[in-house]
Every structure is written in C-alpha cells, then in structure tokens.
Length: 111
Image (tube, rainbow, N blue to C red):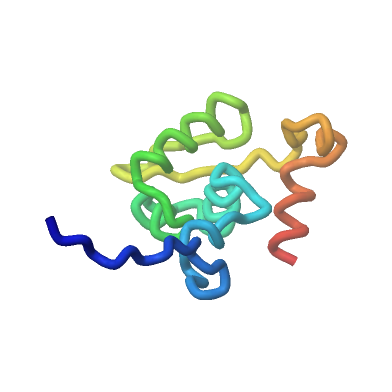
C-alpha cells in the first residue's frame, strides 16, 4: 500500500473568492428584489425579473404569488402579458419595520 502525502485542509479564504456564495448575502430579501424590479418596470416578464434578481424563474413565480396573496402587488393580464402594480401603501411585514410602507422602501432604494 502506497501512502500519499497528506495535504493540509484549509478553509477557503473569504477574500480569495469575491463571487462565492459566502459573499453573496444582501440586506434585502429576494421578495424585496422582485418587488423593486417590478416597481421599476411593471411589464417585465418573469424571466427578466429572474435574471435581474439572480434566482430561477420558478423562484420568481413563487415570490410573485406570495406578494399577490399578501396584497403587495396586483397582477393584471393585458393580452398575453402581465402588468404588475405594486401597492405602495401596504406596511412592511416584519414587526421591526411595520411602521413603514412598501412605498417608503421603494423610495429609499430608488432615490
């Protein structure tokens, strides 16, 4: 039996991989990202939203359904496409930010 030289195990350096999954967390959720994308362009197809947010189209579909079920967006079918209206007067969901509205968040992000 031939023994090979063991290599020391090293943890990946956070600074050596700037695009790694470890460095990709953000302060806003994917739900917020989808909301921001649709607010900026209410006629986007979900495939484009997925590309902007960096998740799958199926993930965007689930988030859009969550936002619609929660009363944060309204979907209107126009021909073969959807048009999305963000309901900006709705309060944010978490108790720490429930005193703020969707519109205030969007205004902060959009400038």
